[in-house]
Length: 296
Length: 283
Image 1: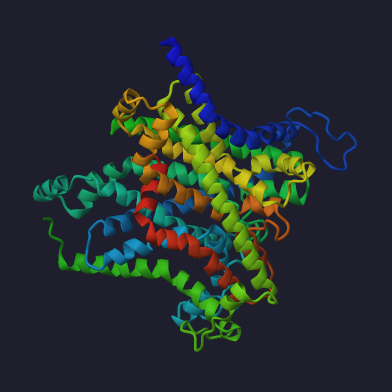
Image 2 (image 1 turned 60 degrees about the vertical axis):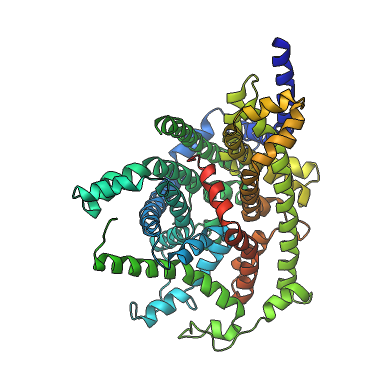
């Protein structure tokens, strides 16, 4: 038996080794070095470059308005996108779950926005929002909603909301797909029983559908929160963090600090603060998975 | 059977039409922009049905080397294709081996390791890129396709492990026991017995791995600089950043870059949805 266990361990080690070498080979050293940078003075012009400064970098970042405003922007982006995606996604999933005539087409095409590459999506919306030639301006003018072309990306608040719409367009389909998958294994007879007992559509939604979808929605919330906190590509293309830094989210802030201002230690600190938030969310995610799977 | 009132049914169809328009209109406009003449795209009032169409931009991308933008798109597409396919193959092989071990074998630190892999998949690349840039620079590995393959694999492999181990776990142990009794070694069992059973899982994981690699932007932006390795995302991003440019050409690049994922989404929808829901752990 012990011999068998040893053989099993060696076989396991052999087949995991390639994954460990590639993944940790790429990730571990830079991860540690970034951590060290975050405690060092890495200013290019500084006389004592490389000196350890303890927690100074963290304290400076946590005291700076820049950091907190990008954190709030990230939170706004995250909460607004995810709420819209969930509301829209759940209703579309309920609609598609009805199997009505002609819905087969919608079921196939609903996944297309999600399949579009992030950069193509961002570039497409930037073109749609264009202040002089954009399709959004043309459409709203021709429908009589606005009387002159607007600069949608011209003010911080409006620009942020435009990025959110672009994100909602692309990511709502994933909510639809997840919820639809859950709804299709739901026992239809409980709905019929509720219907016979006189529950109306709203009651059936609140007391049957939402509880069924609970764990799916929880997983989606955590998954999407992780993604929105890492968001970079869409902002890089549509707004470059502007106007007036109005869309400078955390990852973009870290990128600018490190690659534009060459402030490696500041970039490293923000990167680690993001990683810290991500780690907390990852733990929440695994907890939810473990807990929910016990319940089901 | 639950009966809905006529007005409710009517509302459902209206909602369905609005949803379809909202999700298809931007795609329609992307495609129309790619086949419209430049002047038609910058007139007011804009015509949503183009008065004339041209496919010359597509011809340029595939056949004409004189048009600089078209040439960049073609080379970048080739790079993206080579990198994404290599990443998919590598991640499927390496990831599946590890996933099988995690799902089936007993060894020390099993649980710690699997969470470590999950964490490396979750961490934002910004945490590693600063030192990575300096390291790769000193190794003369910047701007190479092989470098991108390794970098992408380091996040796609954990993804494959995460999904595939749940597929492996769902297989009854009796198959392996039977194989063992018949004299199969562990590697033979994995190759001849287990892998054929999880074939559907392999297809959906492979599709998602390809899509993740195809979609990647941040690492390619930082670690490539020339057409030697630049991917299509970076090529499109560069042209989008410039102002006085023919948007129709960017739209053409966008349509071509979207074709592989869109074709996959349409043809392999069943597998794709299976993989997506499995990756969320809801199955």
